[in-house]
Image (cartoon, rainbow, N blue to C red):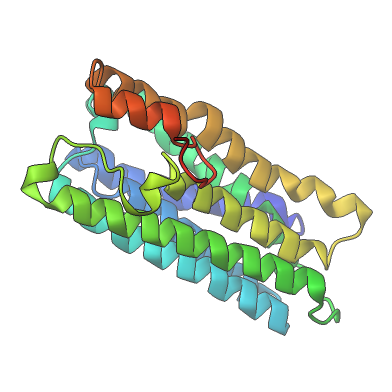
Length: 257
């Protein structure tokens, strides 16, 4: 198949379909996030070896995606094992088609987010590294560190029984109400910037990748759902009201006094 974008879309749906069959059969939430991270890793390595030859920047990009994916998969899998179930799926777990819609969206999301990476990993280029690639790499690593620290701090906070029904407001969470999402958006923008060094003018449409994950987390499935949940759960809580008023929604900033 010459159309690499169509091929990778099919692969993304195949991976999600495989995991969905088990998740639906056993009514389990333990495979959802696992399949998400593994899909990125599988697509990256497939693309790397598909042409039979690869350059340094393609190896670096594959390693970046693998590092991100393994960290995410490990964290989310440990978390779901501890939680037992994901409340997001309580209304759809028993409904085949409702449950399937989520997996279809996840397959499509993986593919769209991967668009800049698919371009680079399918293009043989003799361009070396320059300020653009180093800038993209730096932004990616910055985002990965922010996301990792945020997840680690929140996991440790929630692991203590005394904090079970509390909202974390310390550490990096003191400066942003959603630092993990900030890190997630940032690292994918880093990958896009890294990729632009190998693009011509007609390839910039792959910016849909970072735009999509940014839109998704800002307006659809990330921040809006959590903000609605917290507003309901902590309604009337003065500490939460103060935290919400004084703390940046996304970008880590010094809290208002």
